[in-house]
Length: 197
Image (tube, rainbow, N blue to C red; front, side, top):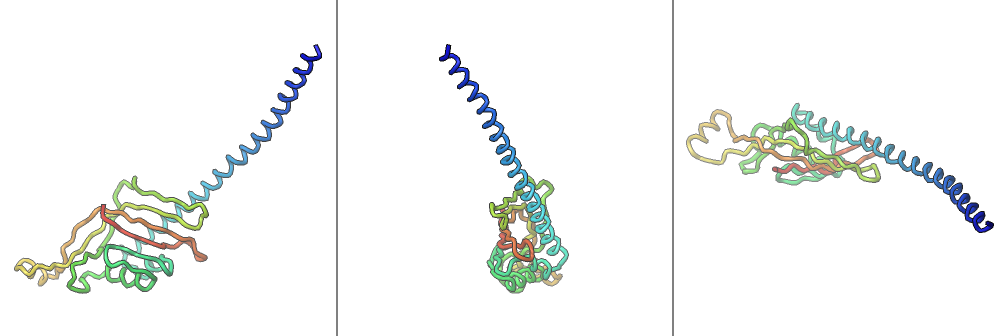
């Protein structure tokens, strides 16, 4: 009988102890469950900030506010809209200004980006916030109006040039791959690349 009583008391100890341990784990689990919610809420705010920054960039470009668009980049940022690839605030501003002109700067056959438009469905858009909360990466769908200088010397090309049409234009589906950095004055574009899809 004492053996049964020992089993009962041991069983009771583990059941009671299990309840205490279970309550402790439940409290810890609640605290752990709360942590990702807080982090994801912060991530959601960062994602919205990134979306707004990208929308501002496109809006400034479409309205010809080149200085405002260039100010969205970090001082040592990199920009690639085809060729050439440029780095640094001054070089980025010069490239954006060159893209904003209606006539090609030279007789080269490099395409410039005349404008951008965002497809109706942005299902491919994705924003990833890095664990430290000080960097993010994003992919945004965007079609670019590629403007290529008319290089042909045929009569039609010469007539087009006389009428002020110095480029052929077409829309090319593509995407922006962008890295962002959180600087003391806010989120900035650290690296932006457009590529055809």
